[in-house]
Image 1 (cartoon, chains in turn blue, brown):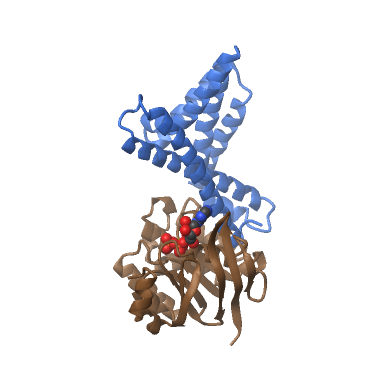
Image 2 (cartoon, chains in turn orange, red):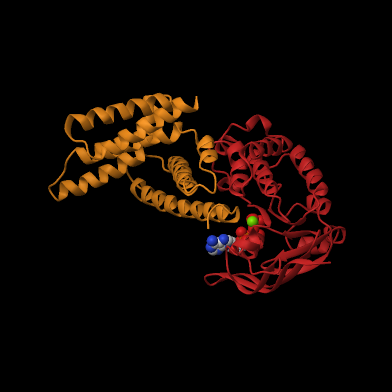
Length: 182
Length: 229
Ligand SMILES: Nc1ncnc2c1ncn2[C@@H]1O[C@H](COP(=O)(O)OP(=O)(O)OP(=O)(O)O)[C@@H](O)[C@H]1O
Ligand SMILES: [Mg+2]
């Protein structure tokens, strides 16, 4: 079980790294594969679309800036999405508990595994906080578009940053007290 | 008896907002001290100062040292909101990690984790991530995590919030059996009276009373003044 998962994770990570250099049809195929793998793992296309929503918004914002400077292209956003999907799959299937045991101190890889685990935890924290903030906004704004909706979105993003900071601070404090980080 | 935690003239402000004013108290070895205060009294802030996570004026000594990495290795802590104390993909992993970090062999560490989860009533959740648990279950897991590090001083911030009646009773039994020193914050009078022998009352950032647990929780006038009843 552990070996199969490790294999899938390494393959997904390899593809994510490769996506950084691929162009044209090869990039497109990698992205489609990443999307399919993510959907399979997360339990449906809708889930994948929902999880990609914040990143897609951000990429849309970057695309608008690029358009304004006259240099828009489809490869950068696609590449970002492909890396996101593939990395999410890799992080989801890695047998972390076994990895931690394998890389336990005094192995120099312990901090590498811990770093990846922290990244994973914080990605999940961000995902949860995004869901919470959007839900809270939905409950208090009657229309998704129109009067007040833009301002509430800005405040939602501000709240997200604040919450993320508080969570990061608490997380670091917890790991420091546990003797896990210096 | 040896003093393991000593706070002398501690004051702390968030920016211009003064939250703690001239706090003095100490905890002796083996003692169980309660920190009672209403919402916003400054209990959590005080704990963060004791752990060196916030720095105020005055002096704090934990096992005779300034709060820092080496003193805090001997302290087990459960935050009021423990969601970020657990981050591994499974609860068993969360409880195994600190043991591996201390050089305990993997089999032994895993067995210890399973046992600790069992005695926290979470054996069935060992393979689940903390994010999938209810708040009360997370709190119990965080308490198990604090205990597995074999602390000499246990600091619990509002351990009973989110716990149901049965879990509170279980926690009371556990804490009474535990021979380590404890510092426990709460605004639940009945709970504090059961698990601590002495109580310090915090009101608007100041210590307004200190005494035997029974005397404090039966002082209606004091409790009313501090917004505790
Ligand atoms: N990060 C912060 N920045 C500014 N003020 C803060 C911050 N954290 C807490 N406070 C303020 O400090 C005061 C004490 O807060 P603290 O969380 O220590 O209270 P508490 O006694 O733990 O309350 P509760 O019973 O609700 O947990 C409150 O007035 C609170 O608004
Ligand atoms: Mg508090």
